[in-house]
Image 1: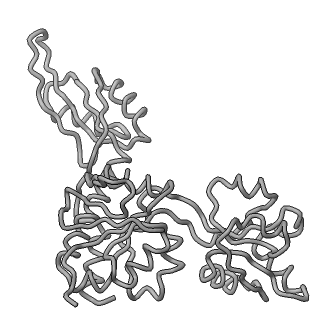
Image 2: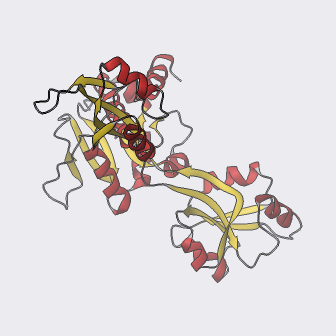
Length: 336
């Protein structure tokens, strides 16, 4: 059977994670084209050689792991749970900025003497039976409980609603994904202090063998990482432009460097303003600042004579080659 020539990217097929993944790719300049909403295949016009497949998050991990799919965007939680021994699957980016949650241990609120994982271990040690833990994440739960000395225990795999398990009696506690924690409260459960097994969000994964063997997969990997990193960096920043009186760009830059947040990424861009109404020397200054620093930046610009401040979003910020690309290349070259 001839080796396929297309590059395949799997995305979640439904739900909030699917919507967020599609929006993320669109923000990176990779809008998905799916003429029929019932289809489980789509295209990326910006990357014509890429076929987009829509799957369940867990199936994405399995497909990338076994090589039937080259790339996937799915939760880090299912990646760690179903990724195997990490020989076949490589995480290219573990924090795409959406789908944030945590995998945690939760016990009934009625357990007044159990507030930490150490408390849980001490309580179970004197029981005459194993702790029963309901979870979808048996591999991660098993490793965590062993590491923290919670023994004996038995894992009850369940794909249903876990929060009811302690109430109806088929488990003592649960290991599940938690976002706001409201669902736990509604079911009279409490997350344990120190009981976070994994902080998770959407991740980009690739099949290691395809990355090493197929140049087109490596090329697409570089493109995906470059766009993702540049977009995520840009989301944290805005472009600020202002007019400022000053005899020269150097004098204006000196005033700006004396402030706390007006340095920009590598310094301001300053250019003359041609005015037909003023004999004074005006310049336009342009800097990129962190969103968190926007209000202080505007105040500092005003303090040194800036006016007419305009703020615009930034789509991409490309700087030096991202660390994640260098890490990927080391994995390809060294066979890690």
